[in-house]
Length: 323
Ligand code: M7G
Ligand code: MG
Image 1 (cartoon, rainbow, N blue to C red):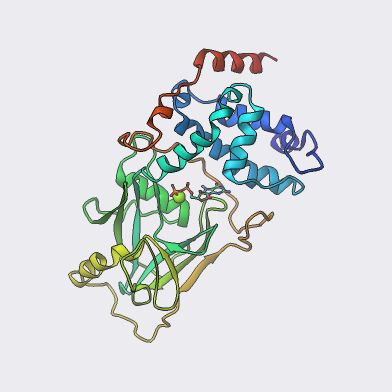
Image 2 (cartoon, rainbow, N blue to C red):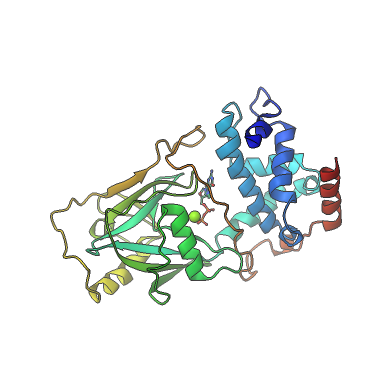
């Protein structure tokens, strides 16, 4: 209950901008109130800003719909401008943000290809924003093993625990630009299994899709299945998946009479952007911060040498707590 009272303090401006009090609260809760080592690069700080943004969109805006929705970039700018320790870096915000987005696509990703008992269908998730389907997967956290990340990401995105089914050397891997994507094959999952994401506004739909339906015209990162289904990072795995299936016996015989169309197993009630949407699940586990140590080869390297003035941050925190 105390949370409810806290976030309702300070009415939003007429223009929907969050009050300073709310921004201060988000900044101290998500950015300042973390171990010192997490404030040593802008990549890490931007991941913290992203958590603050999700909290703002999923909780503050949801409780108070007169508050405006922002893109991550807009929110980053708002937070940097409102927070004393971040304000000195406002002049560099475009480069910091560009650096963060290019960094994000270099963090290794793992997940799972979940096959039903006939090996005819696989489980795909549809992103909240956009309309494409992908295997449940996500970025590795700092010091996280590939299999642990796959287990966590599949659990977050589908509510399904693959930890007892995952075999460490049964995976398909592909490289997209500078990003390594490893998907563990989890075969023989019952098609009446209940799925529902644990995160908010990340996944809008979960469905079993026939592998035949996904068969792509090309091997591109973004492709379309034969029924027009938009796919993201699915096609490049299909050939290896087919060959894995051809050398493994499914627990159940194929069901050729089943429809070609995907079978939806979970759908958010409302997934439009910028709307105070209600979704079926309510719980939201906190995500560990992503791995921030891939090889530093990308553009904007000079910006990564930018360092926060830690003593002044600590001073500000202390002042904040003693007030
Ligand atoms: P991610 O966690 O950055 O990707 O989520 P990963 O799973 O590949 O590591 C991908 C996208 O989903 C984000 O850029 C957001 O648009 C959205 N998203 C993810 N999460 C966990 C949330 C959340 O908690 N709240 C909101 N509003 N969006 C989210
Ligand atoms: Mg994820």
